[in-house]
Image (cartoon, rainbow, N blue to C red; front, top):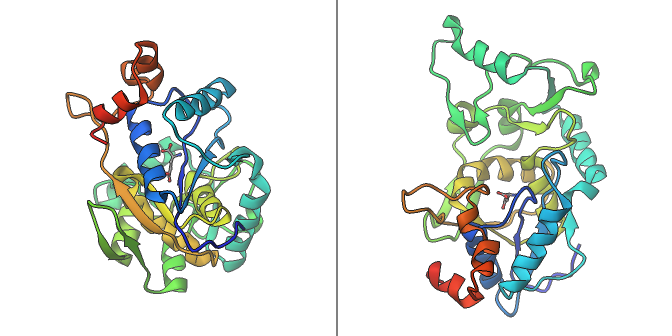
Length: 286
Ligand code: GLU
C-alpha cells in the first residue's frame, strides 16, 4: 500500500488494444488535474486480455501520455502481472459462497432469454445481457478450469445489506444508494472470472484500485452504471471504497463516442500533423 498522504490519488487505466484517441487524452488529463500538485496521478495498464493487447500499443500509450505532458510514478501496475491477486480475491468470494461456475456460451444465454417461459424482454446491463441464471446453484466444487465464474447477485446483496457510493463528478454528483431491485434486474450475475482469462474487468479494477490506494476513480460516464458492481465487490472483499468522478465522453461530429479504430482522432495522428499538447487541450476545451 502506498503511504497515506491524505491527498487525492487518481489513475488512468487504458488497455493497450489500439492507439489512444482524443477521448483517452481527455480522461487522462482530467485524472491528472483531479490529482493536482498535492496528489498522485497513477497509470495502470489494463492488459488482462492478452489476446487483444500488444506491446507496441503499450509503448505508444507511454509515448503519447508523455507528449501530452503527463507524469506518473514508475514502475506502473500491469494487470497481466497480478493474476495471483485476482485468484486470491476469487478465493475469498468463493469462501463467502457468492460465486458459481458457469458454462454458458453467449449463444446459450441468448437462447435461454428468448425461450417463451422467460417472458420478460432481455435486458442489456453494464456487463452485457443480464444473465438468466441457468448455471446458478452449481457448486464451486464442480467448477471446471474452462468455466467462467459468476457473482450470485441476490446472495451478495443479501450478505452486504444497504450500500452507497459518493459521486463527485459534475454529471451525477451526490450520494448514490444501490437499488437491490435494479442490481438484480438490470445488472444481474456478472462474470468475475472469464474463461481462460483469470479475472474480468470488474474484479481486477476493484482489486487494483484498492492495491494502488486510489481515492478517487475518475473515468468516463459510460462506466457509471458499473459502479454498483464495483462498490458491492469492495464490500465483499473488505476493500476501501474510493469516491467516483465520472466525466462526459468525447464524441465525433455525429455524436458517436470515439472508438480505438477511429484513427483520425488518434493522438498519434494529431502529433504527426504537427499539433502540440496545447492544441489537444484546446480541442477538448480543457
Ligand atoms: N480499462 C478501462 C477502459 O479502457 C478503464 C476502466 C476504468 O477506468 O475503470 O475503458
